Structures are given as structure tokens and as C-alpha cells.
Length: 229
Image (tube, rainbow, N blue to C red; front, side):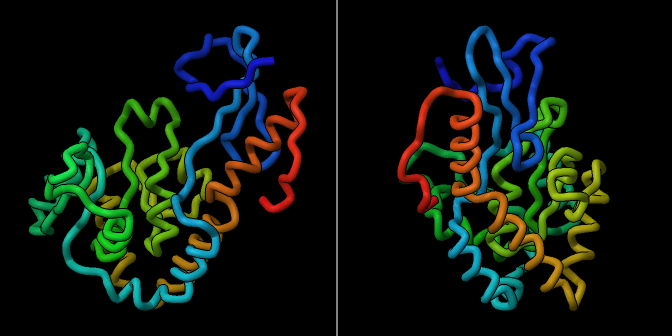
């Protein structure tokens, strides 16, 4: 029996997707004789590292500046976001998205976390094509685990978090909602609740459990020594 990880776009339109027990939007299907697992990414922090951020959440919130930091490629949606920031006199800084080791845009993993923590707001945005494909980005899990309030224009992401993120399909309204939230004096517990949710449901450990569940349920393989996970 062959096992593979696939993208929904590769499959026939009549493919049957069976939800896996566990997270929303994790599926199994059989495509052309292949047993396929569909899953999304997670934060790059371990649960213990998220706990450290929870303990220092007030310090993280005090790091917030009046500029926006973005780590990644400037696709159309992020270009629009940057223009809204600039038009409203909010400095926008982009890092990453380069394979040039000596580029000033390169940042370490630690600096990545620090830039996100100090950003005015830290949304996870998807373009129309990604919204149509029901794409769930790793960025939303990372930003929350770093100590930021989750912001999205993606209805699937909002549903994944049971409607508890800052959400709007209108980019300008979303930005305003995010800034308004940052002005709240009592936002600590709201953010910590989302951080705990990511800690308990959206780390690489959870994704490993998803793979284990898939293998046990849909393949003839047997996994040993998995208790420590």
C-alpha cells in the first residue's frame, strides 16, 4: 500500500474526503489507488516554548511598536496591505523571502519571532486563489504562538479557531479591527487563550499524531515506540 501527502488541486473533482478524527480540515481519501492524507502546517514552536511566551506575555505586548513587520514574500494581498499601511503613515518593513545569504532581508529564526512580537499588528492574509483553495497557512499558528492576536481574512481559518480570531474579508476593516484590539487595556487573557489553543492543537507534535492516526487507521503499517510523542 502506498502512502502519500497530496494537494487537493491534484485530485479528481469527485474525490471523497473522509474527515480524520482530531482536527478540523484534516482528511483522508483514496486517489487512483493511493491512500492520501491532507493536513496543514503548524507553529514552529514546541509546547514548552509557547508556555515560555505565555509567561512573558506582558513583556511581549510591551514590545509592540507603531510599525508593521512582515516576514515573507510580498504577494498581491501583502502588497495591498503594505499600501494601506503606507497611506496611513504606518511604516511597513518586509524581511525574508530571499535565498541570498548576504541579503539585508535575511533574518534568523529568533529575529523572525522578535519582529513579529514587536509589530503593530501581525495578520495572516491569503489571496483570492488561496481562499478558493481553502488554504490554511502556517503563519496564523506561528504569530499566535509568538504572543500575537490572530488576524485573518480567511473564513476557513476563522472556523478552525471557532470564530475567535479578528476576522474580516475587507482588508481596511481588518486592519482597523487589529489596531483597535491592540489599544485594549485588558487583551492579555484573550491572547493567552488563543496561545493555549495553538499549544494544545497546532504544534508539530499534533501533526505527528495526525500522521500516526492516519497510518494506524488506513494502512497496514505498525508503528512502535510512539508513546513519547
